[in-house]
Length: 341
Image (cartoon, helix red, strand yellow):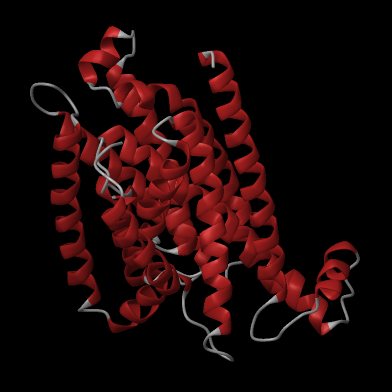
């Protein structure tokens, strides 16, 4: 069979896969609207979405609580999935996650500062401080990793990220052990959750997520070239430094914003790109869209499970995601060669 026909058939199969995952994601979103401490029939959910009754308790549960929660889950999940795929590609490290650039540590430190020194307790306030901390820390890590011969290589970035993360975590711990009130508020954000997130949190995050997603998807061809090594990428006409800067900018925008919205759900950014890669192979033109859809699918399903298993309370989605994802990741690690990106 000619190579052209093989490529067309592969593209058709992968496109069909994207459509199937998108349909599953829509089903998970509908499930997220209907399932919780109080079950809401699907008919009532649809009525609340189309023609909400302000005097109906069930309609208010759907529109005021579950719709914002579901939207935040979709946005944060897509951002974590994309950021994870990009950071693994740009560092050529299969165990890399968005936290490797210090994003989570920086966001966590700035949120602790916001709570402890500025008295901020709202999630809308957390978003700005978390994003600022993630951005400053990522720039610091990239600057340190760029010092010396060869510029910002994957190994130097990983080492710089680990060193800066260790320092920031120490600062965060130092603040928390002297401020019990700040610790009580911070620990609920740190575990990762979609509960209590309002529409305002999603609205103010959308511009950053759109910009980050655009940069990430634009980086697909550059990431394919970087996967072959810096010398080969340069021989193909790729500006390695610019490609890494664009990719790093995408990670900062996506992961910084998503972490501020839902907490450090880093496990999604680690495991989802591997699941997507098992389907698509190493081509980032397909890997990135698959990661963008699979991540919110896992996040919403984990959130629904967390609401069901501990009624009338709930288990935070960060815990459920790790419980679901860990066995999958271990099974893949035993069957696949994760080092082959």
